[in-house]
Image (cartoon, rainbow, N blue to C red; front, side):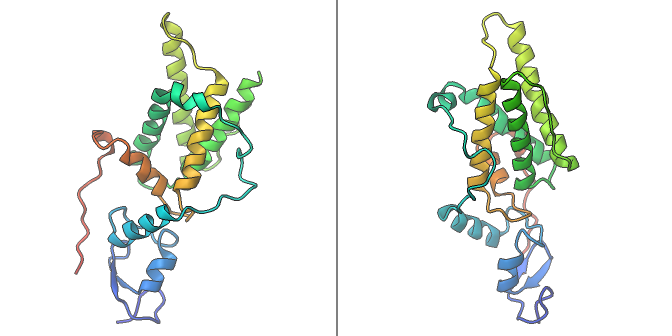
Length: 212
């Protein structure tokens, strides 16, 4: 039987995204590009394992790479960093179509917003794509809620705009290093999800993959 994707080579491995067998070449080239691969596909897991062992180079013109993050920021604000990561993972669990590129776009836009806030300006430029804009808004609302809570608590010091900016830049860079840059990649999202294994909001349904 020929591969239904290329219609040339022999179909040799079952593709859960297509629901049928495809050839190994199409599995490798179309994975997370033309095909929306489920996270528990064994071929995807193997590919992600290889990609994690061979990090990709980030282009020099990538936004925010010139920023120097103070060493003490991550240690001092570990709880806020974890809360932001959890908020992203929770949003993506409720939005299965979200990809790493969506998360990166939202993080970059929000970081740019906080960079202008730290200089005394108020200038927002949320992503135009609906899902990215929605994640941007969800994270912005979360941070505003924390600020309001701190304002009500006499014993709590308020986070500075620049501190939040650096945390967002760190998450953005982490995403750049964790993703494989494929259009439908969720490698970074799965990494964030894996940091909270006990969270019921992040649990996925049982695998329905049946390999013939």
